[in-house]
Length: 158
Image 1 (tube, helix red, strand yellow):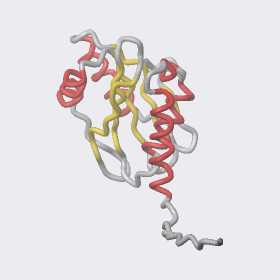
Image 2: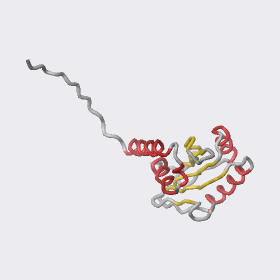
Image 3: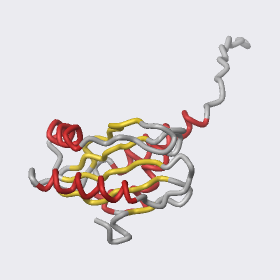
Image 4: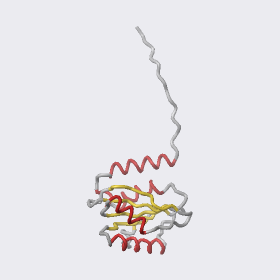
């Protein structure tokens, strides 16, 4: 006896570029969530490139880490214009305290694709580092995401 099976097929729409990048960043976050891989600049750059590379405006984000440099939370804190974003140390400290983080990695994108840190990028990094030093939180890096992302730590700027 032959039985005919009724199968229902659903059509899935192709994923958008944004959805693909978001899924890639989720995979990386899951892979490294309970690993100390975020002490590796390239793993961090890969993760942040998927997270921040999709924006047309500048976005400042923070990776909140525990005492073992494991990711507690990734948070986009400030959204700006095509060439700048205002960053407020008070809000950064509040986010760090809320997550009970022991260390942080800052990141922001340069929508132009040119990831060379500006003087303003360097100044805000110093200000944030000073503010977080008051509450014993280490700043491990500041990544500028662009076509060739830049690590402040690799350049000796942290």
